[in-house]
Length: 107
Length: 118
Image 1 (cartoon, each protein chain N blue to C red):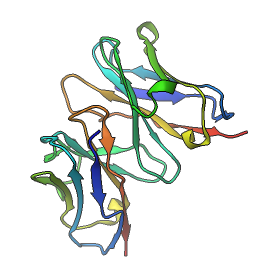
Image 2: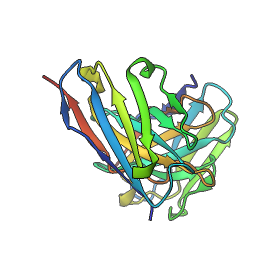
Image 3: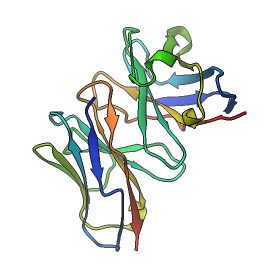
Image 4: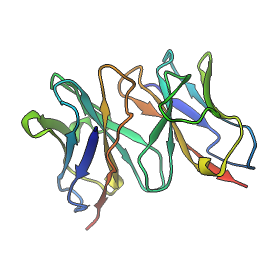
């Protein structure tokens, strides 16, 4: 199975900060990666698909990038509504595998 | 519009069988796959399994021996059955759509909490 190593597991940042979350894939997944945002009590919401593409309705302060087997989600200027858990998912190979999640808190 | 809704018993005893239903609308099961994802309270997401548009299935290898996913296309329903339940199976269970012509998992049900306890 492909392992997705996500970091950090939690982080605290101030409004307006630039925030980056990373997932490292244990095998080649190409660009077959989605970033999800999940707020308490809600279902996951896709933010970035194919590693770098913004999903419908997602603010432009969110972006995705790839460097080799490392995939990053960046929020360019943190807003209060970005308080959430973030998860990566590889869908290159079955079984699909998620990262362990990042809890983003506002300072 | 596309909708998915999970339903199930809420509370199941250890060693018993879990039966969940995902009722969909706004798309056809013969053209889309439906996946199940679960999330233990306070923990991360875990892919459980899927049923493809042609009716074939894929399962998480750690659950495969206890898991069955099926569907009734006439009723637009997908079913998950998991036997020999453990307390570790306590989780919110989500169903989500993987369309053939767009990125996966844009649409999710609201999830249903399953508690395994005596």
